Each structure stands twice: as C-alpha cells, then as structure tokens.
Length: 176
Image 1 (tube, rainbow, N blue to C red):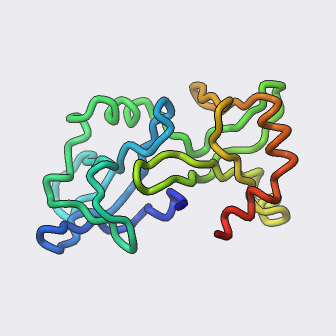
Image 2 (cartoon, rainbow, N blue to C red):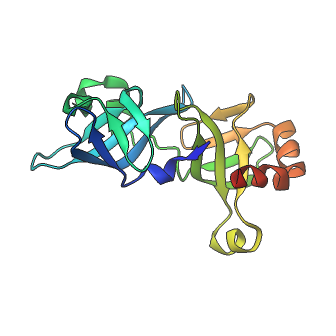
C-alpha cells in the first residue's frame, strides 16, 4: 500500500540508459476503473505540452520510477481515455465524500493504491487543517457501494456506519 502523493516529483529513469528522463507532475486517476491510469510528466528537455507515462509502463517503484526507455513517454493526445480525463479536469483529489443521507465525511486528500495494477484501495480524507491536526486524517476503504459522481464520491448509509464505527482501526492501516 502506497500513498499516491508520494509519487509527485519523483524522477523517472530509463532502464536502458540509466538516465533521468522525466519527473512526475500529476497522477491520473480513472473513476470508472478506480485505478491509476498514468502520470503527467515533465521531461528533461525543451519540448512543451503534456506528456504522459502509462501506469502499465512503470517497471519498478522506489526512490525513482523505472521505465524501459524514453519511448515510454507518450503524447497525451495519443491515449484518448487519459486525454479526456485531463481535458475534463476529472481529478479525484479534492472531491467531497458524501453519504446518501447528505452528510459530508470530508474531502479526498490522497489515494492509497497497490503497485501492481494501480488499483485504488482507499481514500485518505481531510476535514480541514485544524481537524486533521486534532484527530488525524480518516481512511475510507474503497469497497462496493462507493459511487463516483461528477465532482463527488457518494457512499451508502451502511458504509458510513462501518466507516464511523471503525475509524481508528482504518487509521492504523497507515502505520503498516
């Protein structure tokens, strides 16, 4: 389990040359597939425009991300699914988490994912800076019954009740 925010600003190295070829600017999430699709990268050259690396092209995660070679960096427009997510500003981070009874549980601050497929395992929530300092951030596991709407995530009452009941246990998962 890893926090997606820890990927930001990491260097991307080519396994072929051993050179730093880019750095991670942003993580691209698919709400529909509930996983990381790829990354917007900043290349180490003068060319402008968004370039991406697909999640499936990452060969190793660590202090840097390893890819096969420079060809792993692609134009955003060459992958319609990713291009549309970027164009629509369809980012999971910052979206409100609501119960179907209308109660707000906070906002998505980070994603916890697994490295093999990029599957979203849980959402790290914030209630605001002061509340985060007092109580810490809450973790909402990504389970059946969670629905992504246009700019929010909606959960049913049973998930909310389980979340409320097990908040402290879920927080301990971050310590692993």
